Image (cartoon, rainbow, N blue to C red; front, side):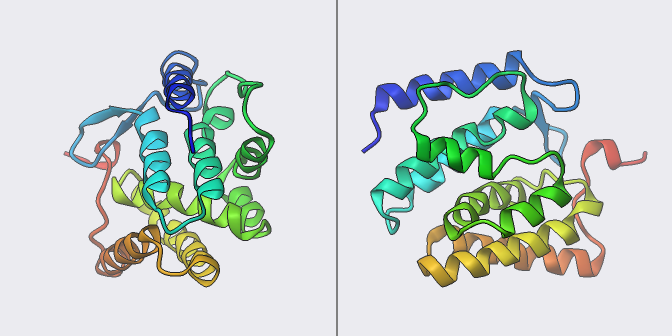
Length: 190
C-alpha cells in the first residue's frame, strides 16, 4: 500500500518540477480546446490517481504504476532528475515510458512488456479525455491508443481504463472521420 506521506511528497516534487523547471520545449500549462489552462502536472496526477483507483489490478502493480505515472513526464519535460528514493520497479517503468518524440515512443513502448503498455495507456487516455491534442495528432494518437487498449485488455481484462479508452477512441474516431476534431486555441483562426 502506498504511504500517503511519501505520495504527497512525490506530488509536490512533480508539481514543482513542472511549474518551476519546465524545459523550453515543454509547457508548464495545458491549454484546453476552450482556452482554459491547467498546470501541466495535473495530467500526471490524473493518470496516477486513475491507476490507483483501478482495484482490479494487483496492488503491487497498481502502486508502482501510479508512482511511475506521477513522474512519467519529468524526464521529458523538465530539467529535474528523478528522485533517488524511487523504487527500482518505478524507475524502470518511467524510463520505459520516456522518449524524445512521439514516433520513438510508439515503437519503443510497443516493444516493451504488457506492464509498460498498461501504464502508458493511462497517459494516452488522459490526453484523449482532456482533448489536449493538436488536431493533426488525433489519427496517430488513436492508432497507438487502440493498440495499447488491445494489449491491456488481453493481459488484464476489462479494466476501467480500457472501458474509458474504448469510449473515447470511438468518440474521436467518429470525429476524425467527420472532420470535427476539437482544435486548441492556437489552431483556431478568427
